[in-house]
Length: 294
Image (cartoon, rainbow, N blue to C red):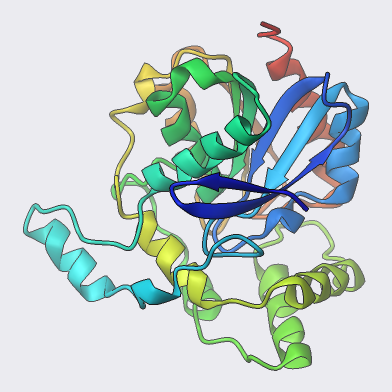
Protein backbone atom coordinates (compact mmCIF):
# COMPACT_ATOMS: atom_id res chain seq x y z
CA UNK A 1 0.00 0.00 0.00
CA UNK A 2 1.14 3.60 -0.50
CA UNK A 3 2.25 5.89 2.30
CA UNK A 4 1.80 9.63 2.73
CA UNK A 5 4.68 11.58 4.24
CA UNK A 6 3.43 14.30 6.58
CA UNK A 7 4.89 15.85 9.73
CA UNK A 8 8.02 13.73 9.09
CA UNK A 9 6.03 10.54 9.56
CA UNK A 10 4.48 7.97 7.24
CA UNK A 11 0.72 7.39 7.06
CA UNK A 12 -0.41 4.15 5.43
CA UNK A 13 -3.46 4.54 3.22
CA UNK A 14 -5.55 2.65 0.71
CA UNK A 15 -7.99 3.75 -1.98
CA UNK A 16 -11.11 2.08 -3.33
CA UNK A 17 -12.93 3.22 -6.46
CA UNK A 18 -12.25 5.48 -9.42
CA UNK A 19 -9.81 8.35 -8.76
CA UNK A 20 -11.95 10.69 -10.87
CA UNK A 21 -14.94 10.12 -8.56
CA UNK A 22 -15.82 12.34 -5.59
CA UNK A 23 -13.10 11.95 -2.91
CA UNK A 24 -14.27 10.65 0.47
CA UNK A 25 -11.78 10.42 3.32
CA UNK A 26 -12.62 8.01 6.15
CA UNK A 27 -11.01 8.58 9.57
CA UNK A 28 -10.97 5.66 12.01
CA UNK A 29 -11.44 5.77 15.77
CA UNK A 30 -9.29 5.09 18.82
CA UNK A 31 -6.94 2.17 18.27
CA UNK A 32 -8.65 1.23 15.01
CA UNK A 33 -6.77 0.45 11.83
CA UNK A 34 -8.13 1.32 8.40
CA UNK A 35 -9.74 -2.13 8.51
CA UNK A 36 -12.45 -0.65 10.75
CA UNK A 37 -13.95 0.68 7.51
CA UNK A 38 -14.98 -2.68 6.11
CA UNK A 39 -14.41 -3.69 2.50
CA UNK A 40 -18.17 -4.07 2.21
CA UNK A 41 -18.82 -0.50 3.34
CA UNK A 42 -16.03 0.98 1.21
CA UNK A 43 -17.14 -0.88 -1.92
CA UNK A 44 -20.72 0.22 -1.29
CA UNK A 45 -19.55 3.83 -1.11
CA UNK A 46 -17.43 3.41 -4.25
CA UNK A 47 -20.50 2.06 -6.05
CA UNK A 48 -22.26 5.29 -5.10
CA UNK A 49 -19.67 7.29 -7.03
CA UNK A 50 -16.96 7.95 -4.43
CA UNK A 51 -13.20 7.62 -4.53
CA UNK A 52 -12.86 6.16 -1.03
CA UNK A 53 -9.70 6.74 1.01
CA UNK A 54 -9.07 4.95 4.29
CA UNK A 55 -5.88 5.15 6.32
CA UNK A 56 -4.14 4.13 9.53
CA UNK A 57 -3.90 6.98 12.02
CA UNK A 58 -0.43 7.57 13.43
CA UNK A 59 0.69 5.07 16.08
CA UNK A 60 -1.52 2.28 14.78
CA UNK A 61 -1.61 -0.22 11.93
CA UNK A 62 1.21 0.28 9.42
CA UNK A 63 1.69 4.00 10.02
CA UNK A 64 4.62 5.43 11.99
CA UNK A 65 4.76 4.38 15.65
CA UNK A 66 5.79 6.78 18.42
CA UNK A 67 7.74 4.31 20.54
CA UNK A 68 10.29 6.91 21.61
CA UNK A 69 7.56 9.10 23.12
CA UNK A 70 6.93 6.52 25.85
CA UNK A 71 3.63 6.03 27.62
CA UNK A 72 1.58 9.08 28.62
CA UNK A 73 1.06 9.98 32.27
CA UNK A 74 -2.71 10.31 32.59
CA UNK A 75 -2.49 11.41 36.22
CA UNK A 76 -0.33 14.37 35.16
CA UNK A 77 -2.60 15.09 32.18
CA UNK A 78 -5.59 15.38 34.52
CA UNK A 79 -3.56 17.42 37.03
CA UNK A 80 -2.51 19.87 34.31
CA UNK A 81 -6.12 20.54 33.41
CA UNK A 82 -6.93 20.99 37.09
CA UNK A 83 -4.23 23.68 37.20
CA UNK A 84 -5.70 25.32 34.11
CA UNK A 85 -2.76 24.26 31.95
CA UNK A 86 -2.53 22.47 28.61
CA UNK A 87 -1.06 19.02 29.32
CA UNK A 88 2.02 17.75 27.56
CA UNK A 89 1.19 14.81 25.30
CA UNK A 90 3.19 12.99 22.58
CA UNK A 91 0.92 14.49 19.89
CA UNK A 92 -2.51 16.10 19.59
CA UNK A 93 -5.73 15.72 17.65
CA UNK A 94 -4.59 18.71 15.61
CA UNK A 95 -1.47 16.74 14.63
CA UNK A 96 -3.68 13.82 13.63
CA UNK A 97 -5.89 16.14 11.56
CA UNK A 98 -2.72 17.33 9.79
CA UNK A 99 -1.92 13.69 9.02
CA UNK A 100 -5.30 13.37 7.30
CA UNK A 101 -4.55 16.49 5.26
CA UNK A 102 -1.23 14.87 4.35
CA UNK A 103 -3.07 11.89 2.86
CA UNK A 104 -5.14 14.25 0.68
CA UNK A 105 -1.95 16.07 -0.34
CA UNK A 106 -0.31 12.78 -1.33
CA UNK A 107 -3.24 12.12 -3.64
CA UNK A 108 -3.28 15.70 -4.99
CA UNK A 109 -6.80 16.23 -3.65
CA UNK A 110 -7.68 19.82 -2.84
CA UNK A 111 -11.07 19.15 -1.24
CA UNK A 112 -12.78 16.01 0.02
CA UNK A 113 -15.86 14.80 1.78
CA UNK A 114 -14.80 13.83 5.31
CA UNK A 115 -16.27 11.09 7.50
CA UNK A 116 -14.97 10.17 10.94
CA UNK A 117 -16.08 7.65 13.55
CA UNK A 118 -15.61 8.03 17.32
CA UNK A 119 -12.15 9.59 17.88
CA UNK A 120 -12.00 9.83 14.09
CA UNK A 121 -15.07 12.05 14.33
CA UNK A 122 -13.19 14.33 16.73
CA UNK A 123 -10.27 14.47 14.30
CA UNK A 124 -12.75 15.24 11.51
CA UNK A 125 -14.23 18.12 13.51
CA UNK A 126 -10.77 19.56 14.15
CA UNK A 127 -9.93 19.16 10.47
CA UNK A 128 -13.15 20.95 9.47
CA UNK A 129 -12.56 24.05 11.60
CA UNK A 130 -8.76 24.16 11.17
CA UNK A 131 -8.71 23.45 7.43
CA UNK A 132 -12.13 24.58 6.15
CA UNK A 133 -10.94 25.03 2.56
CA UNK A 134 -10.21 21.28 2.33
CA UNK A 135 -13.66 20.05 3.36
CA UNK A 136 -16.72 19.58 1.11
CA UNK A 137 -18.97 17.91 3.67
CA UNK A 138 -18.70 16.34 7.11
CA UNK A 139 -20.21 13.13 8.47
CA UNK A 140 -19.62 12.31 12.15
CA UNK A 141 -20.49 8.86 13.49
CA UNK A 142 -20.70 7.97 17.21
CA UNK A 143 -18.44 10.90 18.07
CA UNK A 144 -18.24 13.63 20.72
CA UNK A 145 -16.93 17.13 21.38
CA UNK A 146 -14.94 16.00 24.41
CA UNK A 147 -17.16 18.18 26.61
CA UNK A 148 -16.59 16.99 30.22
CA UNK A 149 -20.15 17.97 31.11
CA UNK A 150 -21.57 15.27 28.82
CA UNK A 151 -22.63 11.95 30.38
CA UNK A 152 -19.54 9.81 30.78
CA UNK A 153 -19.02 6.31 29.46
CA UNK A 154 -20.46 3.53 31.58
CA UNK A 155 -17.84 2.67 34.25
CA UNK A 156 -18.27 -1.08 33.87
CA UNK A 157 -17.65 -0.82 30.13
CA UNK A 158 -14.61 1.40 30.62
CA UNK A 159 -13.16 -0.97 33.21
CA UNK A 160 -13.47 -3.95 30.89
CA UNK A 161 -12.42 -2.15 27.73
CA UNK A 162 -9.27 -0.56 29.07
CA UNK A 163 -8.03 -3.50 31.10
CA UNK A 164 -4.79 -5.08 29.83
CA UNK A 165 -5.22 -7.42 26.86
CA UNK A 166 -3.35 -10.68 26.28
CA UNK A 167 -0.46 -10.39 23.83
CA UNK A 168 -0.78 -13.94 22.50
CA UNK A 169 -2.71 -14.18 19.25
CA UNK A 170 -5.65 -16.42 20.13
CA UNK A 171 -6.29 -15.07 23.66
CA UNK A 172 -6.12 -11.52 22.27
CA UNK A 173 -8.63 -12.26 19.54
CA UNK A 174 -11.05 -13.92 21.95
CA UNK A 175 -10.79 -11.07 24.44
CA UNK A 176 -11.41 -8.42 21.78
CA UNK A 177 -14.40 -10.32 20.41
CA UNK A 178 -15.81 -10.39 23.93
CA UNK A 179 -15.26 -6.63 24.34
CA UNK A 180 -16.76 -5.85 20.94
CA UNK A 181 -19.92 -7.71 21.88
CA UNK A 182 -20.33 -5.46 24.94
CA UNK A 183 -20.62 -2.26 22.89
CA UNK A 184 -22.49 -3.63 19.88
CA UNK A 185 -25.94 -2.48 20.91
CA UNK A 186 -29.15 -4.48 20.72
CA UNK A 187 -28.39 -6.14 17.39
CA UNK A 188 -27.23 -9.75 17.45
CA UNK A 189 -23.44 -9.73 17.50
CA UNK A 190 -21.92 -11.96 14.81
CA UNK A 191 -19.04 -13.64 16.66
CA UNK A 192 -17.73 -15.35 13.53
CA UNK A 193 -17.51 -12.08 11.65
CA UNK A 194 -16.03 -10.34 14.71
CA UNK A 195 -13.39 -13.02 15.10
CA UNK A 196 -12.42 -12.74 11.43
CA UNK A 197 -12.03 -8.97 11.79
CA UNK A 198 -9.93 -9.16 14.97
CA UNK A 199 -7.76 -11.92 13.46
CA UNK A 200 -7.05 -9.84 10.37
CA UNK A 201 -6.31 -6.83 12.55
CA UNK A 202 -3.89 -8.73 14.84
CA UNK A 203 -2.04 -10.33 11.94
CA UNK A 204 -1.68 -7.00 10.15
CA UNK A 205 -0.31 -5.07 13.13
CA UNK A 206 -0.47 -5.85 16.83
CA UNK A 207 0.51 -2.65 18.64
CA UNK A 208 -1.53 -1.84 21.76
CA UNK A 209 0.91 0.82 22.99
CA UNK A 210 -0.33 3.30 20.40
CA UNK A 211 -3.83 3.29 21.86
CA UNK A 212 -2.67 4.97 25.07
CA UNK A 213 -0.95 7.77 23.17
CA UNK A 214 -4.00 8.25 20.92
CA UNK A 215 -6.15 8.44 24.05
CA UNK A 216 -3.83 11.13 25.42
CA UNK A 217 -4.17 13.04 22.15
CA UNK A 218 -7.89 13.35 22.82
CA UNK A 219 -6.98 15.56 25.80
CA UNK A 220 -5.66 18.29 23.47
CA UNK A 221 -7.39 20.46 22.35
CA UNK A 222 -9.80 19.07 24.92
CA UNK A 223 -13.39 20.32 24.75
CA UNK A 224 -13.93 21.43 21.14
CA UNK A 225 -17.59 22.34 21.65
CA UNK A 226 -16.98 26.13 21.40
CA UNK A 227 -14.97 25.74 18.19
CA UNK A 228 -17.24 23.63 16.00
CA UNK A 229 -19.81 26.38 15.46
CA UNK A 230 -17.31 27.71 12.90
CA UNK A 231 -17.96 24.69 10.67
CA UNK A 232 -20.03 25.76 7.65
CA UNK A 233 -20.11 22.71 5.37
CA UNK A 234 -23.10 20.32 5.15
CA UNK A 235 -22.83 18.17 8.28
CA UNK A 236 -24.51 14.91 9.24
CA UNK A 237 -24.29 13.47 12.74
CA UNK A 238 -25.06 9.75 13.06
CA UNK A 239 -25.39 8.25 16.52
CA UNK A 240 -26.72 5.07 18.09
CA UNK A 241 -29.26 5.49 20.88
CA UNK A 242 -27.58 2.84 23.05
CA UNK A 243 -23.95 3.90 22.64
CA UNK A 244 -22.20 3.04 25.95
CA UNK A 245 -19.07 5.11 25.17
CA UNK A 246 -20.32 8.36 23.67
CA UNK A 247 -23.89 8.85 24.85
CA UNK A 248 -26.64 10.02 22.52
CA UNK A 249 -26.33 13.43 24.20
CA UNK A 250 -22.87 13.73 22.62
CA UNK A 251 -24.31 13.34 19.15
CA UNK A 252 -27.13 15.76 19.92
CA UNK A 253 -24.63 18.35 21.16
CA UNK A 254 -22.57 18.19 17.97
CA UNK A 255 -25.67 18.58 15.82
CA UNK A 256 -26.85 21.53 17.93
CA UNK A 257 -23.50 23.34 17.74
CA UNK A 258 -22.75 23.05 14.00
CA UNK A 259 -25.02 25.36 11.97
CA UNK A 260 -27.48 23.44 9.82
CA UNK A 261 -26.26 20.02 10.94
CA UNK A 262 -28.67 17.09 10.66
CA UNK A 263 -28.93 14.36 13.29
CA UNK A 264 -29.70 10.75 12.45
CA UNK A 265 -30.35 8.56 15.50
CA UNK A 266 -30.17 4.82 14.86
CA UNK A 267 -32.16 2.66 17.23
CA UNK A 268 -30.25 -0.27 18.66
CA UNK A 269 -26.81 0.85 17.47
CA UNK A 270 -24.11 0.96 20.12
CA UNK A 271 -20.50 2.02 19.60
CA UNK A 272 -20.23 -0.14 16.53
CA UNK A 273 -21.14 -0.68 12.90
CA UNK A 274 -23.81 -3.41 12.91
CA UNK A 275 -24.03 -4.77 9.38
CA UNK A 276 -27.79 -4.21 9.46
CA UNK A 277 -27.39 -0.41 9.67
CA UNK A 278 -24.56 0.04 7.15
CA UNK A 279 -26.95 0.58 4.19
CA UNK A 280 -28.77 3.27 6.17
CA UNK A 281 -25.47 4.92 7.13
CA UNK A 282 -24.23 4.82 3.54
CA UNK A 283 -27.46 6.27 2.12
CA UNK A 284 -27.49 9.10 4.68
CA UNK A 285 -23.80 9.85 4.09
CA UNK A 286 -24.33 9.95 0.31
CA UNK A 287 -27.27 12.31 0.71
CA UNK A 288 -25.23 14.64 2.90
CA UNK A 289 -22.28 14.62 0.48
CA UNK A 290 -24.58 15.44 -2.42
CA UNK A 291 -25.43 18.74 -0.76
CA UNK A 292 -22.00 19.96 -1.89
CA UNK A 293 -20.74 18.74 -5.24
CA UNK A 294 -18.16 21.50 -5.81
